[in-house]
Image 1 (cartoon, one colour):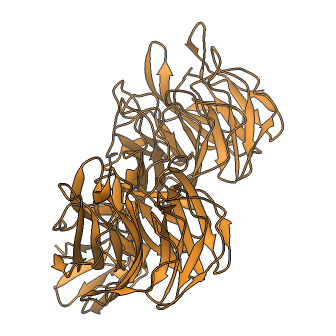
Image 2: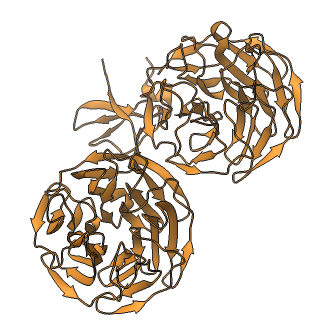
Image 3: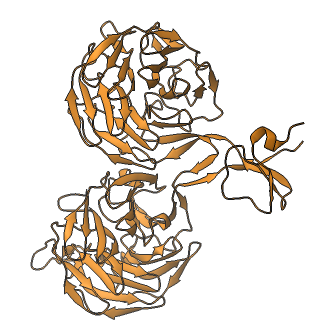
Length: 618
């Protein structure tokens, strides 16, 4: 009998605890548990951050860590592009024209898209993407829609499709050399709404619609001729395909109802995977050049409405846990527009704010330790929508207003209070009486900007910024914007301020501060408006919630100092509170959306770990 080392080439070691990682085929004996352990192949779909814009009849390109979502349809055909970085989606360049149900291929920095809607039976327009912008290229030879592509920007394919009238699936193949489209040999089976995978000289066309019914046929292309390959186990159309000719993935699609089925191809036959999509879908996008061990499915119909949901497929020894918001302990008082400070979800203070009832303001302060909210001493001047900063034992509250004075001219405050972990004390007033002033920093080094100034003699938005050193106020750089209820993270010499609730409307604007001047940065992908949860630093920030529209602001976004990308979705959308110095430790507490609530949610960032299992020794 051969030993494990002779067969595998690796020795079984004796250890008292499992290592944090391991390679496929590696094993060890855990003497503490008395078990044989090792990394095991895991095949699963994992929920990922959603698209910015829900859509169907969309197409994809790239890999699971660098993908494109190209065009599609909502209530109208889209021209926009979204880019996926393996964690979330960000806005990419817009196409010169709208497109859906098109053929695509290539990578995130070198993609092509051709044909599709609009047009009575499709069009021939071709565009190329360089990672930033789309440009028009030479036209496809045959106008068509509901078809797919494969390959690269300089060696691409357009496969099958449909042209109407007479609404008939096509066998036509066209090859792209980066300049011109030329006719290739026709497929053996006409198909529209199929899946695809591979490159120009080794491609797959997977299943699809062959009037009057769906087909299970897979065809393989060698760059010249088509040959019949193995049939899929679930006959369907409008599916997603990715991978190579010898290691492909087919997922979702219509049978005719939306499916969760996943199948893998080894170059000869299809095997039904034990991993199923969490959300049944058809007419979705896929990362076409992703290897067969990974995949990406996004958008689509389920069967209605259209989706923003994204899922990642992984077949490896790595277990991926997607970023997520989970419920924490509810606050003692439902409120919104309160002032928050702390390090994050294990150390947070919520003070004052707008509450239901009369008077519509509270002076109460609550402290969260990651498990329990505990009421502490009141703030001296009850207020809401003021600026804040610092940590649980050294907090700062600046300005704000009192809604109790409505409908008469409301009272706007310049009051500043510091918190020492037990009580609040009055400090030197801010030079401006304002509400909705954004701020970032600590109790002894804080910068505030913007806000809505008092109603007398005339209401206006401030463009001033002020810096606080724990005792005195000095003027900072003037802001190139007028805003209220923005949020901020960072320090006085490296801050980022984002969102806006008013003037003229909620928006997605972002500005960086270097201690001297404000500079416009890349916009957020979604219109979060104001009054969000905001945690992190200028190079690693998170925003969640906001003034609206409420359903849209449920999706949180991450900022790396340059680019915003979508992340996990809050369970409760709307105005949210929360502040922290670490984006992975973000918190969302209280809020309004509409109606007051006291819900607490805690953020957990995406993680990866080796999937270690016990193996039988019998």
